[in-house]
Length: 263
Length: 295
Image (cartoon, rainbow over all chains, first blue to last red; front, side, top):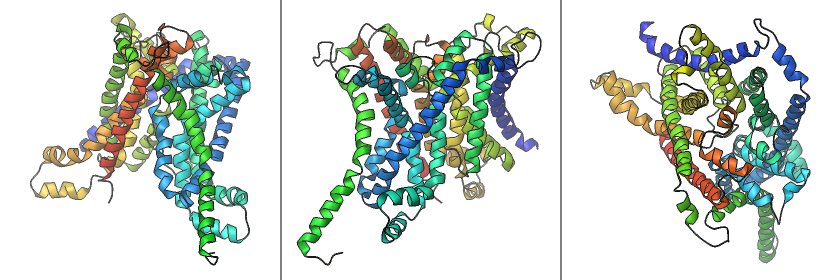
């Protein structure tokens, strides 16, 4: 036991660093009423209609981002795997570009290019939402790329495609009924990360939509005005993150080291 | 398929190739429109003045106390949290791999690390306000013990506070990077060193650390980049009052604070350059580190 003293010490310190803020947040969120523990802060959170509306908005954006990323990446990657192997490093490189452009810089570039004449697409609500969607797709690109690529690598793509074609299937049928079901689990992995990124994303939403439309800017705004509600929301969003990670673990994939997301 | 006349045959192939290549066009178009064009536009504009003439003046203008402060703050925070995060992460990773702790602890720590490295941004800032803010649980607890943090120069909303918060998502990332590398240390190497008469210190000094060094450096570089591009955490914590590059760019977007738009483009270009160097270095080091992982 004594021989294991140092390893236990390091792990304990790590666990302490990890849990202390979470524990403190939980206790803090219950202290909205003076002197007793209560769920008052949670009641107030749920009573604010903007909590629900911003969460629903961000959830919708997340699902849309996942769908559009799949629409863009699955056909592209399938073709690369089947016919254009030489182009693969190029696309792989492009998918890593989001790592070198911090989201503040990216949204700055968007405002520079798209928010002024001749394009001015941020003048309409639809245009702004479209731009936000594109931004989210860029932020989640490395993760979606990696998971779809891993999925396609793991199956015998050529045989599946040739078998489908010899049975008379067109490309649409092949994508929807053969390729997608076979890479579903791998794609799910990237989808969860994308979901977490979009729900927690502050920068893009803050500078394209302003405060309080999307979830994270709304949170940041309440954080400045209130004391206990932010803690309550943090506990709620942490529970959700835990849920997502648990599902990922159940899917049998280890969480890998990544640096994008809602920092 | 190849039964037709030679000429029709090659024609068919070429057409098919063209058709196949076209399917990559939407992806490349998306990349050009939403990654290359915005970043490239900032890059180009940083070399032009307000009249649209080519110039290097914007970079010369960066020699300004506020800009220098912003860059030095960003670099210092990234560097400090990379070092601290790397040390803690390395020790924890060592404990769960070579340290010989039960298997369950290892799984739990890796799961924690997966969560914590993604637990950042606004909620993380709030969690630390509840912990070490003016009325935070730990602050109050220590005050009851007679230690008043805020009267002794500590503030969560300052440089030191930001370092503490950043390390929260930095060290778990290091754990995730180092665990596979430490797993790659083979028992035979240790045995071989022992047979040749090396003690534990010599084994670490001459065998294990040189093998681990690329992975350690790769991890530190990754942590550096992780902190350098971060914006949301500092924004939620300090409301963007700390002079960091990301904050200056953000303020410029909310309203003209620099009174010189081109200077903001130069700032953004500087960030992209630093991030490119960072990720490039990481990729090279990671490739070197993985050399030892192949069994």
